[in-house]
Amino acid sequence: VQLQASGGGLVQAGGSLRLSCAASGRLDIINAIYWYRQAPGKQRELVASIHSDGNTNYAESVKGRFAISRDNGWNTVYLQMSSLNPGDTAVYYCATGRSIILSTIRNPRVYDYWGQGTQVTVSS
Image 1 (cartoon, rainbow, N blue to C red):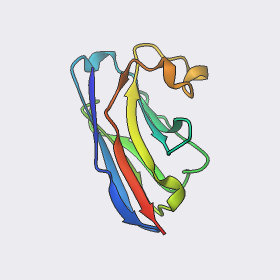
Image 2 (spheres, rainbow, N blue to C red):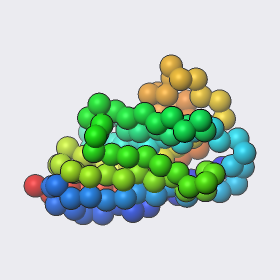
Image 3 (tube, one colour):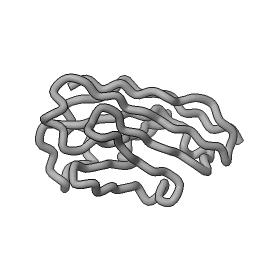
């Protein structure tokens, strides 16, 4: 599986961005895709996930502001980000894996495939 994240950029506080994660290769093994972010000097943190049954999950810090969605299949997963604030500044990554247990999804080491990351910078 290959993942490619895009859509990052510089935006003012209160603004919006939509990130895309394009997947290719063995899409049949995907049952969920996750968005992570990593700010300078901080650990990589799980932001949102979308699963094959349609369920979505969000970190408390982004609930009500971010929305994850996907096209018909796993070709592209989107992360719509609204009401951005400087605390959202980070490199955003999409990730997936062959068999990820729900209790481990916040551990970046369990993922087999990562996109290259896209920088989001929110100015105050």
